[in-house]
Amino acid sequence: MADKTRRLYMACAFAVTLLFSLGNTTQGTLLTEFAEHYGIGTLPQSFISAAASFGMAASLLLLLSGLIRITKNALFVVAVAMLGGALGLIGTMPAFPVFIALYALLGVSFGFIDAIGSSLIADVSAPDTVGRNMGMLHAFYGIGGILGPLLIRATASFAAGSGKGGAGAAAFLLSAFGSALFVFNLYTYRSVRRDLPAAVKYPERPRAAGLSAFLRSGAVPLLLICGLNGVYINIITFRTAQYVTVEFGSSVLGALAVSTFWAGTVISRFTIPRMRLNFRAYLVGSLLGAGALTALGVLLGSAYSAIAAVFLAGLISGAVTPLCMGELCMMVPENTLLGSVSALLSQYVVSLTGTLLAGALTPNDMLGAGLYFAAGYSALGAIAGAFYKKNVG
Image 1 (cartoon, rainbow, N blue to C red):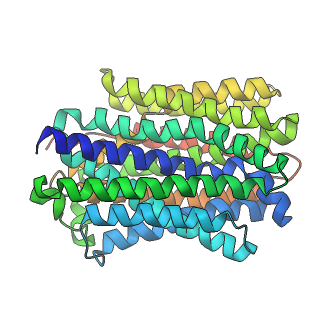
Image 2 (tube, rainbow, N blue to C red):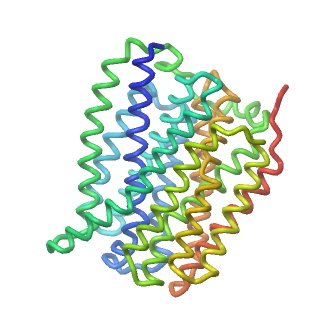
């Protein structure tokens, strides 16, 4: 593959992942506005994140079934259009059941973008650069996590000050970004498609028949880690802003808390894949450390301790998911979509069930309890990491 094509493909994947992250941060950053607009408590609030996770899982099951008969490239472009459209409709703040359905549709677009983007990065990377490039891809998700709460909060505050719906205005802004990115991706795909190798243009479709051998190759602990670390990140993103905003009376500090978590995560994803670390030791140590820091941030009882704790947690554990996904993709180099889909399916299913459980058991007047659940999930991921053994056969 020509260097120009490789660079364009990576640029598209990075830019779309950034938008995906910006859209996903609306769940947590605008949660207070959503709750006030619809008059809902903590359990119905968790339906928003659960709906997105449900849509993500549904999209991955479609990919795994092989029922979709268009190439990865074309589906990637379609998913970008779907993302922008769903955000625009969410901005209208429709009736709550429709709102939840739109978040599920948004989740479908997220799932396609996440799986295909990771697969394409693995396809165009040399084996010894997969981990590094996967870390860069997921770092752009983290950059969206940094910018998203600040951008969304600023937009919502400005719109509310002008007498307009703040949450809706933020969603409309992201929808406009999505439309521009759709045009960029469509142009790029058309300009480079003749230069693509057959393996990228027409990948083998993941099927259940090859799943058994994949699982026997040492994938199970990594899949468990992807799921448990996924629900940890989901709760941190979903609950931290609300916890700090409500408990300490500052929406600015609430948005800052989520941004600092993603700042630590981005640093981790750019740096840790370049280090020579024992993979299993890193998984166990970083996940245990992240869980302990998260719990400590709530125990200390201040907004600033919570902000510092989630920053350090992201700093040590941010590279876990991209490194696991890179390892899973390289277990099936002839069909990288199987590796990425399996990792993300585990992540989304656990996020769906884990977020609902945390929401159901978190009292309305003790929002910090949700972060204790996040700490527990991270600790369980560390236990799964202890059982990982690289298959060298």
